[in-house]
Structure formats: structure tokens, C-alpha cells
Amino acid sequence: QVQLVESGGGLVQPGGSLRLSCVASGSIFGGYVTAWYRQAPEAQREMVAFIDSGGITGYADSVKGRFTISRDNFKKMVDLQMNSLTPEDTAVYYCNLGRGDVDYWGKGTQVTVSS
Image 1 (cartoon, rainbow, N blue to C red):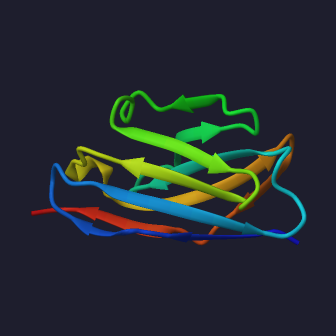
Image 2 (tube, rainbow, N blue to C red):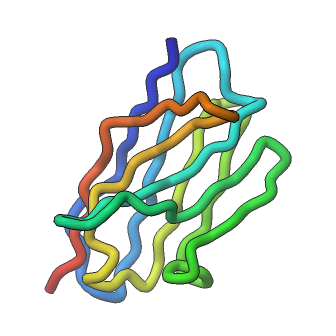
């Protein structure tokens, strides 16, 4: 069984930075794609960034140049560095571990960008 635990969310002013972390427990990690998603109130969940076990990354257009995803396969961790945050980045951020039809999700961490 895989559990994903996110941390690092909170309240930050516009223009500020936050770093989210996700730690996976269980026997799988290396062969899976890891990603961060977010869901704002009354909106659909959207993919923010992903990184595969080889280090290939992808980002939503809305966060390119501001967010950076990274992972440590040995520690089974995936981080999301978020810079130049805006109120539009306010959402619950979820960690995802997936391969094919298999998906694992964390419970999410709240990020609020407000002055």
C-alpha cells in the first residue's frame, strides 16, 4: 500500500514563495511518474507539474518559469518550489504517483496567496 503525505502549504503574500514536499511510503516509487495537481474552489483539479523517474519534467502553462518540480528517488520524495505566487495560485495542492491506470493521491495541502 502506498501513502503520500504532503507538507509545506500555508499563507503567503503575493510575490512570495513556498516549497511543497511529498513523501511516499511503501515499496513503489522509482518506476512511477510523480506530479503535483491543484484544485481551487469550484474548479476542476488540474495538473501543475510532473516529473518521471528519469527527470523529464512538464509544467502547466500558468506556472512555467515560476514553479520547479524535483524528486529524490532514494528518499521517495517529490518537491514543488513555487515562486512569484499570485492569488490565482490559491488552491489545495495534491501529490500524485501514477503509472498507467494506477494512481495514488495524497490528502492535499492548502496554499493561500493573499495580502
